[in-house]
Image 1 (cartoon, rainbow, N blue to C red):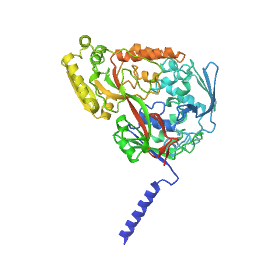
Image 2: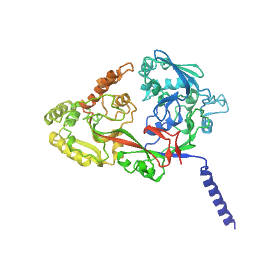
Image 3: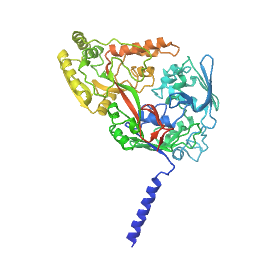
Image 4: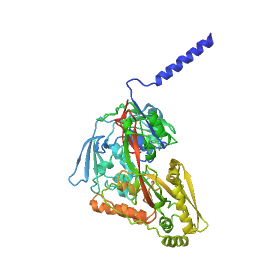
Length: 543
């Protein structure tokens, strides 16, 4: 009899657990996949796609971008700009609050004020001082922010980034709790847009110090002021976002929670989108063929994928310019047979970041076997890492394996060296390239830069995003010459020179463009995105 009672009690307990996990009828949830694990949700230093996506939904700056890409008010109610466009005065929302979780309180607080890292009476207001501290952190060289360039126009910003001035000389001032003044060194027409970037998010100094270097590394070390807050964080698995109950902005989340899952295999994303397991996600042009707007899917194309031969300047042999030029000068693009989903052939480094604002036909390295042989011999004299006995490996995926094999035969014949092919699944090959594990790669690279200047900065010598290892002081100087006081023609001239440099010095031989696609489910609306790292859920509805 006792045995039956015990079994009955266990069943009752299990049923109660399942019922407690079930969402209420009036609650709405969204489900979204990412193929990169979440690393750090510290907005000033977040670099990977997954971390940025979460941070954009959990933090709110002075301004934000809406679904049309327009800059609108957010943490600031409004702002004034001086006649010379050098001074911005922001008037903050007086009711904006940080969400301090119970987990953070337990981890960081102490009832004994003498021992407390975070005081029991913590002031949770979002004030101008939080923006001052956040921006100072961003430009501080010790922080190591890869996006600090967005704040370089602020007075003394570039000097602080370069270590020539202290952070307290940055041109940001808390006039009072709810008034922030930012002074620029030069007029920047894109400055408001730059303030929508994560690097310009507020940071509470008291909470940051209490974290003792762990800010953004776990749920208990997060302090959110955005439309969502992190409710659950399981590394390598899932992050659960809950609608922030303390958020007081004009546009609150239309859904109650968002589940963001980490998937090791990107190829499962379209399958799960089809099954309705996810409400939205990015797929490749090849995978997009399985989705149709007539079936109710939302489909947004991003022409941000560039196929080409990429040469790794971090490899000892390919760090020699003449060696790269030798290979680039014997690329026969006529033997490349593209699949149906490829958009078209290109001689441009043309992506979504490079709008057709200016016309340009860069001068390509002409196919010339004699010139290539001369470059190869010159490279051998410059580097001991280059010899006739060396082996060069070309990384690619199944789509172009046959075409690349034909190209290898040309290189073997012209240079008399062993050239091999390494064929991997598309996602595996791209991951290897992004991690620098290649010599030559014929692969698609997804360019997530939101503007042309940002794209070209990724090829600077010290850029964290420079997958080609290109190092050229003249190129760096070109990028650093960009100022927002330039005319459009002057700015375009810099971009043209950058593009020509990347082609002339054998960094890339562009071949084809391809689109990536943002897919929303049949019964989903309102989720909008500008790149894989910028997906906004606040207006999302799933029926």
